[in-house]
Length: 153
Image 1 (cartoon, rainbow, N blue to C red):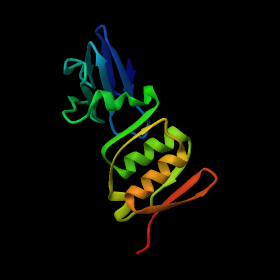
Image 2: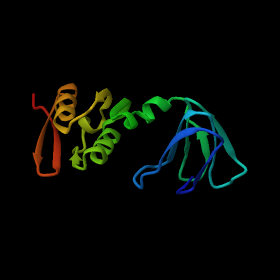
Image 3: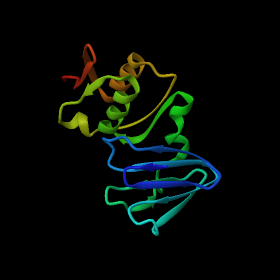
Image 4: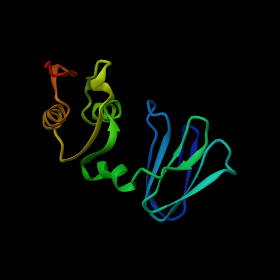
């Protein structure tokens, strides 16, 4: 599979490759078997086994992500959203894709917050209610545009 500047070679496996235009890297999460992940220089590759997540950054350098989990990366296949200590900006980007909305977070302390959450069979209202409760925030919705605001003290 080729995406941007990354090549993932299936060596008898199951994996998910993520390469959204807005992402800074291509990500590959292996659930079974082995994947050879290479970037701009095909001779430089990383072997990924079940449970591993690898990334190819903008420069085309492949690497194993020691922190990421293949189970978390593949949760969307089972209809779940999982965030593990991710910046709110990344969570919002994922929610925008998942629900086809435009969630906005004004710059400030709220945008710097980190999120750890699991949503099984998520709905937009359910996720927004839980997220704003966790963050001490509120949201306003006008059509597809949703703006998160810190709760005034």
